[in-house]
Length: 384
Ligand SMILES: NC(=O)c1ccc[n+]([C@@H]2O[C@H](COP(=O)([O-])OP(=O)(O)OC[C@H]3O[C@@H](n4cnc5c(N)ncnc54)[C@H](O)[C@@H]3O)[C@@H](O)[C@H]2O)c1
Image 1 (cartoon, rainbow, N blue to C red):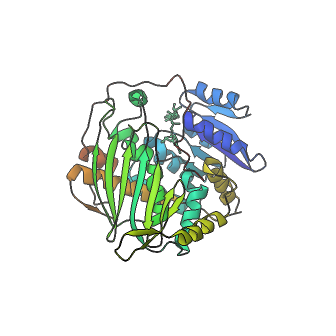
Image 2 (image 1 turned 45 degrees about the horizontal axis):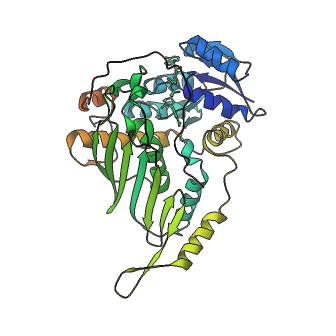
Image 3 (image 1 turned 45 degrees about the vertical axis):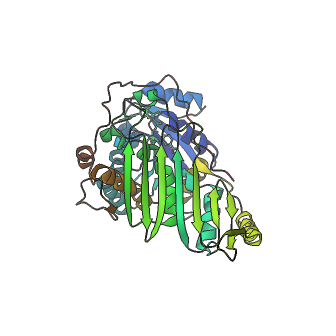
């Protein structure tokens, strides 16, 4: 039985508690901490748990009788709390983004290794059937070489989304829509395609006047000579999120569809129905995941702690995503191509460097302690 402490009792914490509750034999939430202790108490009461409420995270880690901590805090606290917990032998599951700088990511990677504990960055979309199936088709050589790609991370948030105190500053949130939302699809890009060689990007803020950071942007990642276009926004009603990949043998989309073509004598396309059928059958032949999203990843975390499975993700996976986002920011600020990897000599390696490098699109003038509701949505289901 793994005893969990939840750090931060806001919107995503409720989703963690509900997910852990699905595995009563394996895990128990025994403590919840929030600077607003009433939020910790309310989360415990509302979810019908017997757990202790703390007003201080460090006290929960020291005295809460926990084996692992689930970090559901604003991004600027992710690394410091991870390091504090891991130095005390606690395993860590940390919400996205894993940290607010590459310097912090590197400290977390070193600490997990030094302390011999498990660190999972939350990247729940990896744990979805379509992603698993496409990854396996690609790895099995069913699709051939990649020729072109497009990731659409399009979301919608009202202006008041940025009224909460920690959102909309380079220092506390470490960026705008790329850090907060596209982080999911950038992680999926790395899962499916690996790390690119370089990026060129443009970012802007078109509709969120209480945020210093971007709310829309475009990036072009290069994988050798293959471009992968990545678009990100917080101004797109309906949130039409999708992945499109052109391979030698077929083009695929998530939500799932497949198209294949052969050339007529004049080079125009003719539908390759047989090719499409073969890939579609192979796709549906890969079993659906039993669990998806947060429940799947939280269960994988527990199973890894208990030695029942190998770590499905680790701190290096979380760092890859931050590295690509920092590449986007540096390119958008300088107008130059940025090549990977990004190391300590980069201007965006530290939070101070990021704050110095990036433009402030607007000044954050409004700051609330809490919203009146913590209802949230987790984006469009990327479908079966
Ligand atoms: N994986 C996902 O799909 C997903 C979805 C939403 C949010 N998130 C991530 O989860 C994290 C939290 O987001 P949220 O929407 O739950 O925010 P939130 O503001 O609703 O919750 C954060 C909570 O942390 C508490 N807190 C802040 N600083 C603290 C401190 N020093 N000590 C104790 N408590 C403190 C706040 O009082 C608040 O209750 C963010 O990093 C966000 O990016 C992930």
